[in-house]
Image 1 (cartoon, rainbow, N blue to C red):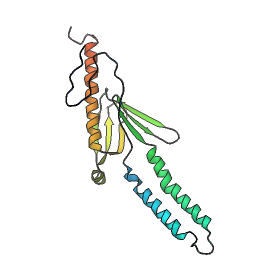
Image 2: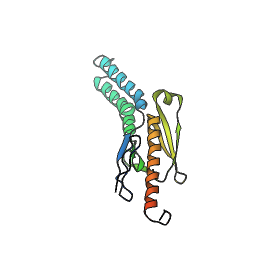
Image 3: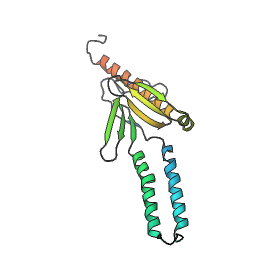
Image 4: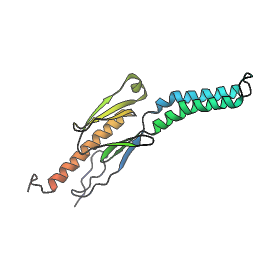
Length: 184
């Protein structure tokens, strides 16, 4: 059996009926611009702590300054960073996987083979940064929202290509399986 010819740099398709292995295409998180204010707070807290250390008025002590700086860094820097790190999107050759959560993880998937519509929404700031929100809807399940995705046009094109390839492979395998719908 011969391999089909590829067009435009697409990967080689497996022969009909052969199992298709799942490959990782991309793994990404929301745009990091959400951490801008956290980074600014971190720099300001370190600058203020360095300035006021051993330079406080008499009722205050250095340990109070360090405790306050630690609390501010924990609340305004560490927690937003952990929340940002806890959300990830994985695109494979078979599906899109959205994971979120720190302790209890939530995972949602959408298969390319079932097909879905892709809608992209970009606000003015998202256009400035090249980001956007992608909504995937297959008409049956609840829509899958990928919020503030960097390089949104590239991700949109990749998802559209994966739907096309998956549906071509599913149709070809259905035709070659002899289910009565193919040509004898």
